[in-house]
Amino acid sequence: MSVEELLSKSVTNTVRYIKRKKAKTVIAMFSGGKDSLVSTYVANEACKSLDVKFKVVFIDTTCALPNTIEYVKDVCVLMGWDLQIIKPKQSFWELVLKNGAPSPRRRWCCKELKLKPLWNYLKAYNPPRIVILGLRNGESYRRKKIKKSWFSKDAQAWIYNPIIDWSEGEVLVFINKMKIPVNPNYSKVGFAGDCFCGCFTTLDKIKRTAEAYPEFFMKIVEIEQKFRSGGTFFYIAGKKIRASDFIQINRQNE
Image (tube, rainbow, N blue to C red; front, side):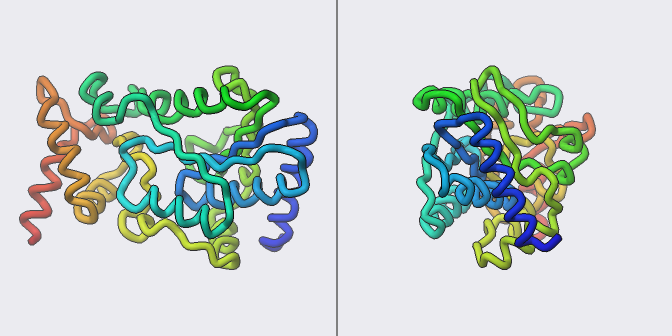
């Protein structure tokens, strides 16, 4: 199946889903990443023929890497998408001092920085509501069993993943064919960077982030210095990783 055929199939299925749920509002979540870019495109195409409110939402987690927010704004202007930027009531940096650094076992960041702001935002729109995500089963081991659709009681909305069966290669081919710019953070640090909270990161990503954005990374070092009992900002495979070590590595390499 060509990318054009895959796009047509995804748009058609999304139209059918919206009609079946009798949705009044469709919210596409655009994080600045490649997958959410394509899923937002699919959602926009689907909504063109429907009498629904369509919004593109970016959640400012307050710990996004530099370039991310500006990139999202630029793409939405280019594509003609109605962008809404929402954020949590308390910043990530305030919550870290209160709750400690997030980790795979204590992943409070997702709920506080992303889910709660979205739930509050959705209250402004009458149900039925649909939230479009860019999750793909092939993206990672953790997402292999994610369903294409489900109902979220907390959001009081249907969640739909229109590109869940797309491969990474198909996503990249589509973006290249449409000549849509990709977030510059991919070439700088290897990921989009809408949320650099430390969960599920790698040593390579930490190192590249410290090198590419030293001022941003120093905020992490300063926060870490305020932790009690030798706490660290990063935990990888159960091992404590100090942010300050990466600043020292960069100084040695200068």
